[in-house]
Image (cartoon, rainbow, N blue to C red; front, side, top):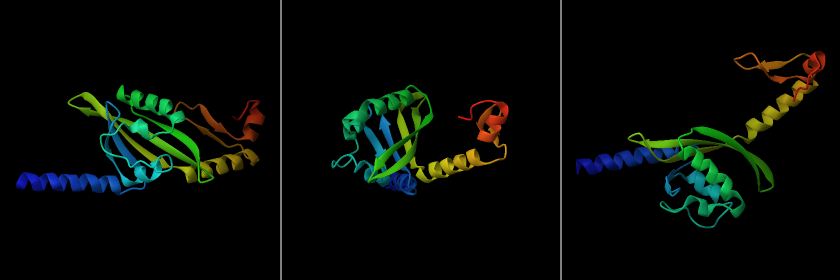
Length: 168
């Protein structure tokens, strides 16, 4: 009875973590079958399929045909041990939305057992970035951002013109 209570408490804690965000969270095993998911990913995937997402189902079966290969390559990359993120934009209900998806290998006893994914809607952040870049390009001031190695990452058009290089 004690072990059963601890297991139930552990499951409730994990469910609370999965559901305590607007981010879309799911995990896949090495065969790319669904092992865990939250409500946010179910709602999002409803744009692409009427099938309810079930634990144990092949994840790529829920994807439109044209997107399966790209997403399979992403999962395979994580299943090879790489932790990384990508940004995608797509049109939903007539509006362009931007999402960042992070892929993280799941290790059990040092062996890759799957991949966990978190996707977040970054549409507003992308819009703010685009707006700030447009302001930068119309500014008379010389504005720039450098990386830790002191290389220019972004430069205003006025600074690019002054130094004779492209600001792209």
